[in-house]
Length: 195
Image (tube, rainbow, N blue to C red; front, side):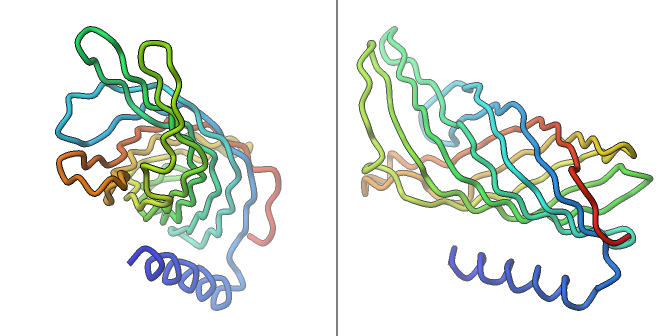
């Protein structure tokens, strides 16, 4: 299912590029804060992290498609008998976001995000353990948000990524967890081609 979604998104992006030669292409960098947590049966607390990466925006009149490649620090915290278990996960995320421009640079955002696990550690009572083998190598999320593209190249976004797939690979259905990440980003368009 994940491969089908990724292939569909890539084909859609290619079709849009080919059929709309008049579209403007903008390339840039972005970064910001993550407020990450898990959607699970456990009462976890949010963990602050960061994200940084690149984006390409293919803008038409009121619609744009924005694929990104983002390094993202995620995870959560859990209190176990007065001691904290901290999950520190790193992902390479590839969102493919549709942007609908409402007024000027103000836009609404929606699209899939494909996450690929780069590293995973848990820290409990000062002991760090590599848990990457206990997690799935990829996950799918749905990104919902809003942004503002300023005329001088600066972009500001707020996006919520709702995990759609279980990240645990333990086979225990009671340990199911899905990523939830609220992101606040600032970006800068490095250059623009076309419109």
